[in-house]
Length: 153
Image (cartoon, rainbow, N blue to C red; front, side, top):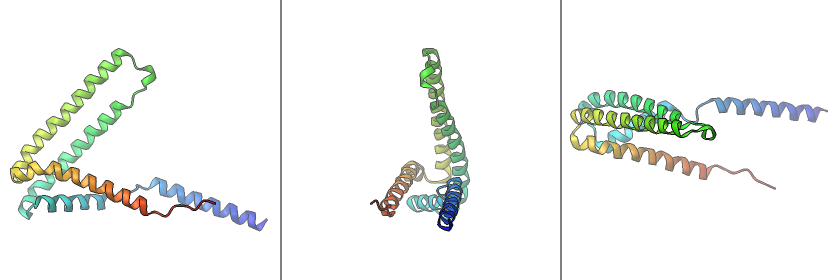
């Protein structure tokens, strides 16, 4: 009876720990942002006087871009079983409008970035941004490979 009680207690504790871990984000947002700032600053060789102008603009841009991406994701969540031709036409028009919003935002901010940075740095920004994302994917992939796998008998 004591063994059964102990097993149940340990099972309940492990479930509560697991539940707490699921509610926590998988990453530290502040560390991620700091790493991104360091990566882009180093990649573009951003000088301190440029940084004071550039980073507030970039943060505004990122916030607006995140909102557009949220909008795009919500437009993609459609019950395909009940999709009519008319609804599909509306969704296509809406999706294209949202994509145009994103392009307009990029046009607006690339001009602003070219004033805070050099035009060359502004041009290379998108590449640095993509490289940072690739770097994160590689790190995540490598960490998953290094995780010990449970033994099966």
